[in-house]
Image (cartoon, rainbow, N blue to C red; front, side, top):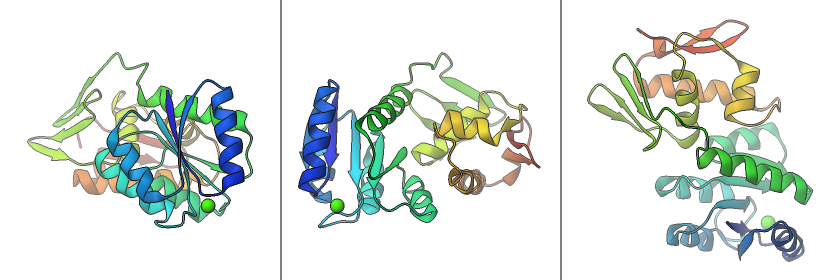
Length: 222
Ligand code: CA
């Protein structure tokens, strides 16, 4: 299990490298966005812990560029703590977010959670079909009829989660807990943004129905 730590602050990096190694992880440490992209491209990285304020490329852009070619779990670690930043990085394809200063225990717990999700320890059903919508949970592909639908990693997670039980209305809090592994308030806007994006990409808002005051459901026959 190798963690790629992207952090240009020497003191923070030293503490995190030590803490992660104490918890049994191998750590590759880089100080720039360009190095981070290169390392992920080279492979062998289990998860990325990414600072936003980097000397060359902003962390959100690093995240976006990695997502073009990799589903590696990314946890953003930053002192920027406004809701907008959280929404922004999650929309850029990050899997989670920790606000500095944070403890090594919190970081390790979040790493474990995103890695567990990405390795799909619970994925007995890999082929999900709802009408003309076909989701391959293993290959992480979505087909609508003959068309391949390109979703972000989190959009895919959300659609797969809802589509496993068509007609079931999932509560917002449950979706946040199970798909985002979080309960923080800022994510509800992110959830709406992801639903909107999925609807747009599927070309029909009826695929994901809002149930007022409750949450969302994937309809069997839009
Ligand atoms: Ca920094």
